[in-house]
Image (cartoon, rainbow, N blue to C red; front, top):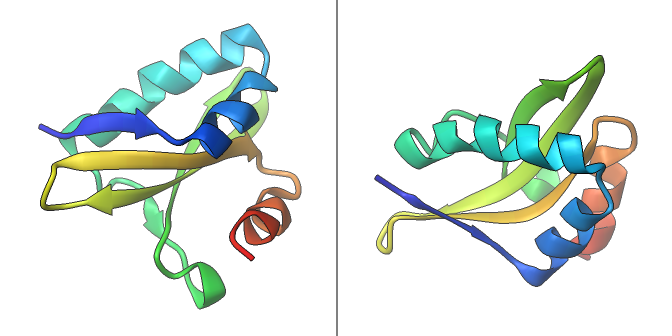
Length: 94
């Protein structure tokens, strides 16, 4: 079983989401504790990240994370709505 860890940038991005969405996110992210590779592997300049997709209400959300195999960690770097998610993610890692 893996442990879910949130980086400071991840906390900032998740704090901007409504409370209900954060609650849904934690419930959806519990899947990652059992299977950290449930998300999609990204390509291009973000090839080292995974993207986990979930829905809250009628809005699609994304969660960007990495997997630390040796320490059994799922490290959440960023979470936001699907709209402009990848543009904001690229700016975070430039």
